[in-house]
Length: 266
Ligand code: DGL
Image (cartoon, rainbow, N blue to C red):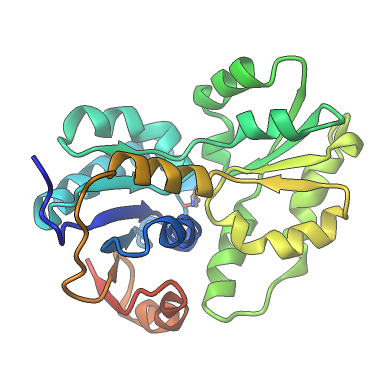
């Protein structure tokens, strides 16, 4: 059965990181109605336990899909996906697209054979990441580093706050100081927040390091799964945030750059 023409694609993240996926989605499906949802009351997911993350994500997505009947849900968050994707797929009747650390393309790109991976603490310890490494990066060296300060830096930057250079420096040295870190030529941005800082990261890592993230691949996957469907945007796209009303005022202007014109609490 075809979804209603105005049924939205729901993009979910703990914060504003999923906007990096939304930017790619706009490129491939500019006509698609989108509902962006950020669990800012639960941010940062990366510092939570697996059980806490799974409970929040499954609970919120269950309520959201009953209320807004999305045609498809994208968990635009590596942390939530690597932990809760299977569970959410088991319980919801909606197609769900997840976000997987881009280890496969990184393994194809690296010339030195050494790949860095920046993610949240919760993501980098997942067996899912071990599996991706075993499947796609055999014979390569994958160095992982948890960079929670980059999540805060990206959140602040989008709200107009000055960037703390120490956050970038900590992420770079966290990878470079590991044995073999000098040879990193490719860095996986395994958190949807991090592409918002790629200019700063690129400057700090130097010109020989390339970055890869999953956003374009996710957008292509959404386009594939919704092929042949009709899209009609009956009202401007909006975002829902679980955080405070004050925060909505801070974030609203940046959302306009992503063609999200309304912002409400959920
Ligand atoms: N954007 C999320 C991710 O892709 C994580 C941010 C957080 O710690 O909540 O992993």
